Length: 98
Image (cartoon, rainbow, N blue to C red; front, side):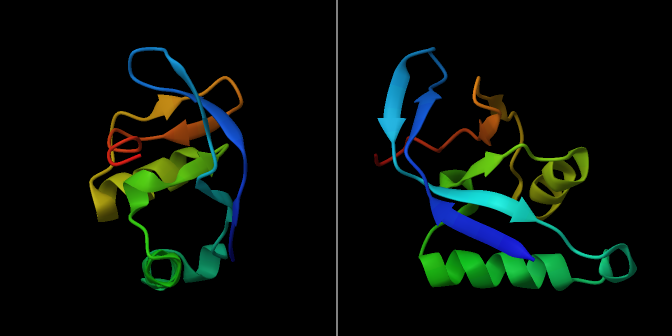
């Protein structure tokens, strides 16, 4: 299950400046444990990225788990998450082109 939606958020950039943005947000991402490490999550995530015409660094992720962050690092090279006061996480490149 991968639930996404557009939300209005106040996000801090790398310099600490507050920005009001309306990004596509990952609200929930869950693959049953019996199906994890089988490619289902990667296939599902890629399908959502393609449907939304976006890239993973442009997403705001709501309260990601350690496993979710490891997944994003492994498959998309996303590291150095910027944890926000509202518990969303963004990655470097989020503000590029905004």
